[in-house]
Amino acid sequence: MMNKKRKGLIKKGYKQLKNDNKLDFLLKLVDILSRTKLNNTIVLKGFPCKHDFNTELSIRQFLTVRVLGYSFNKAILYSIGANKPLRCPLPKEWRSALIKQEVQVDRLSCALLWQGYVFLLWAYGVIQGFKSIIYLINSKKILREYVFFHDIGKDSLPTNSKTYNIVNWYLKWKGRVKNVDTIAHSAPNLSDYKYNNLQVFYIDGLPNLEGIQIARYFFLQVYLIFYSLFFIFIKPYSAILLGELLKLLRVNLANDKELARDYLFHSSGPYYRPIWTYAAEDKGSRILFYFYSTNTENFKTKSGYPIQRPRHLMSWSHYLVWDKFQTDFLKRFGHHKSIIEEVGPIWTSSSGGVIDVSLNSIAVFDVTPNNEDVYVSLGLGSEYYTPKIANQFLDDIYSVLEKNDVIMAHKIKRKNKNAHEEYMQNLKKLKKQPNYIEIDPDIDATQVIKKTKACISMPFTSTALIAKHEGRPSVFYDPSGIVQADDRAAHGIPILVSIDELQQWVEGIN
Image (cartoon, rainbow, N blue to C red; front, side):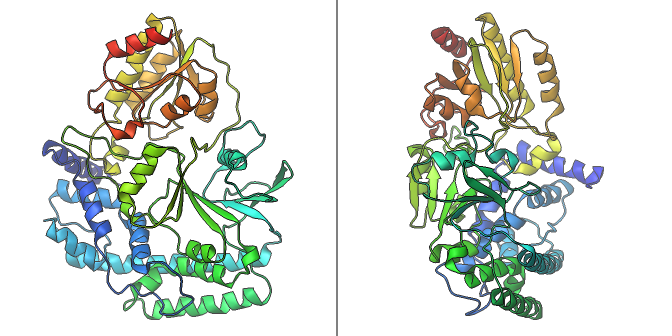
């Protein structure tokens, strides 16, 4: 656990960037590093297979996810706050790129940490490989015509046709694969069950192997493990990607019929496309990347649109998006020939719970602000999702709705153990008010919207678009004056920027 002194210096570094009006510094560095190409990226020449993907880009995607996250942000902030050179695991090309940006870098420490990190990834790949062998030996499931949902939880799986989760969404989608008999998923510790004549199974996400295939997989795995270890200093990316290469090997050895018809990946992990998905696509599977949210852009400022997160890395072949605004968003980053399909709101998860609210209610959706320790490590380019703004958002709305004798049906985005204390205290006060109803955060937003007469959302949450799609009056409300009225991230939803505008809007629908 991080000690208090280090936490204090990280916060000091953040405050220094804020005082210098350079909160976008972390975003800038991530953007630069994620665009800096890496050398010597041939992992295993001619083995285990050749597929039509860019190895260097895949490695850059992988390292952006693994290296340029919260730990990198904290390391930079600590370096600034402590006035010490940066110490964190980075490849040589990225260390050089930081130095060009006048970042103090402890070259020796970073190089040693990098070598240690390479070895840890290699060891993790070894463990993944042997777990895969054990899984294949023990697996008794026979999968025929199936689709696979990557990285979903229990609430994303259906129990009845009325729940708004991704599986039910897929089964209603006109572009789905027809005649499937199995829904496969990666949610652990759940029993297999039947749903509407479909089998619902847990699998590890990769195709089964049988008999001689398992033997071949084992011996080739051993070869890859020792090869990548032997050349760990000469060809580090063979060691770094060992776990991914073993997955690719398993897909290559599998019969085409063992693969899912569709593999669905969601927008919480956009940057790295697993290299095995290219092989699966070559064998006839469809790789779908879906957005369950539209809150994906950094806010426009008075001087224009800021640096965005490194979506330029994305190389998925088939995107499912909500609307034309999201299509345009993707096209601004797209360097690949991809299918972009507009499908309307995409459901994600639901507890299946039932709510009972008055028809004289307006649904309210905000974004829970994190405590300071977490917030500073997010690498945000501006301050918006803070307790001050979130509390004013809720207080203004409650004040206006109470004046108009309308009930405030408030749903937080999700349960958050890192929620800011000031925000939680304000919620406690609101819960005591007569015109306030707290909605269970596990209940899906669509159900709340359908049972209320209008919707107010914090910029730029997806609930505003769901409400519009359901035919409910829908607005964003910004009490801070930070949000620009013409920000394309609003997807055409009106933005109210004062309590007077909010009052007029509520009067107009009341």
